[in-house]
Image (cartoon, rainbow, N blue to C red; front, side):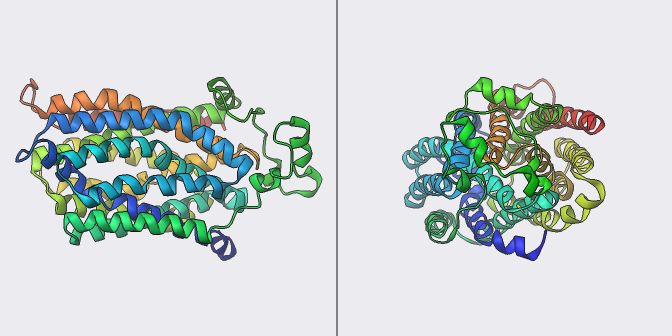
Length: 437
């Protein structure tokens, strides 16, 4: 990825950093805040686990429907116009906890967070990756996706450092203020791309022939603009049209399966881990912050440094296989943690496991034309959201059961091991995808 391309994405990278900084700052404190509001004085709380799972399920269902639609709309009306939606929607729930963290304020936060997360979490990544695809040629797109993910991880690191040293009340206030700054910065400085969305604004979005005339001619474009076209879509894609896209090639189909099972395992791991650590090792906010710092710093280094070095030598598909192996090992090591320091060791494996998402995103991006980047990234995000919903239905009761007194065997990390098996299925599928390519 050249310096000119990095400079061209400068404002987007700043926006991504600020967005992640504001969103993730509250993560280390949320477990303690949730349990203090719902089950004060206890280290195990089934109600907190079930409410967290319900929130993930509702958010995932909403993102499943909204993200492909928003991505498709960005192909027609521009990335910046649609990025305003997640940038502004994320402010409200943070403002509620900035004002108070009692039981009533928690439930108000819970409801607004559930609703706003449908349009803020998945669509921000989807639209930003489509923006990157508009600006960067195919040959350097994987590295560009890695840089974007690395900047997001850097925002995660900065927010975790801030949360580590700020009291809970100030943490939520700073997070809400940062969310406001993010929305203002995006509106003031981010420039619209000159790719599919901008070009298509001068074409008729209702006429297929008009749209075809607006595509660059193959005789005067580079190989990146000659990418295979996806099936034509209406303004609002239906589930059957999304299915047609995902089955239009074996690469899309296998990438969808890998995304589903990897997201199933990852969502199960994320929803289980903090409560597992609380129940088994009595982790506090600062210990959560330390663990998240290791994950964030290692992941940021990996995406900004390791991925640009390995992609030219190995390619996205081989690197995807290696990253999924690391993800499996990470989940299994968490599940058998015998001391408080073992999770810190397991967290270091994100130097490879963090590369799964940018690899998949790059693979599917190369199979889409310049006018379908928002749609195809939205489809992948929608699949990930579907997996999160199913993961909630599986791992929420499983985690509550494993951490309760009713379990017939002493293995509090059993649900984490199950998340590792889901990632193992994604790993097996990624091998067949490599062999089929």
